[in-house]
Amino acid sequence: MGNIQLTSRDIGLLQDLYQQCVLSFRQICGRHFSNVGRTAASERLKALKNSGMVQYFYVGNLIYKLQPHRVGHVYMITKKGIQAIAPIFKDCFRSSPIPLNTTSLPHDLLLTEVMSAVKKRFPKSKLLHGNLIPDDMLGNIKRPDAVMLDRNSQPVVALELELTRKTGFRYREIVDRYSTRSSIKSIIYFLEDES
Image (cartoon, rainbow, N blue to C red; front, side, top):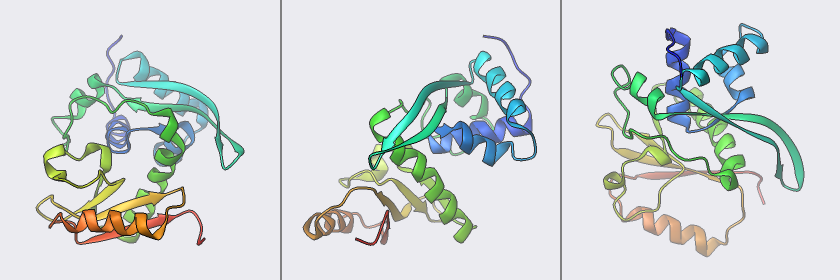
């Protein structure tokens, strides 16, 4: 693994990989390389991989709703990448990356888009991916997909992305579990369709 001089774009990318846990090549290009070509993005990602800051996995196509969706490579931050941004990125709760879970990959990639839409709608909000929430902050509630934090970095709004149908009873059960956690004031469900 070689050394690399990190640019401000690299730091932003590493922060994004930390915050989102996993990003596809398409998402990275749109979020960090929109003003350059895909070749330049690919070369920079390769340099970050060779330096040990990121890792990638080839997943090819994902089957979602019985349809293939081309994903290609997905990228994740490594422990070395987290160590590189820790001094400048104050919100690092974990010192190790979240392991890749291929069974939830369609959900995780879509969650990135949901969190981006929420951030556009509420630009001053601070969002935290559910996998990054420290266990002691959760109490006895299920780990939400993401949370909106208040000024004191306490979760006040749970964000839930639902790609599978649940019964009304199951939703009530989830809401009841959240009601035992005093800091969570609201739950926003993002559903794939209205049915």
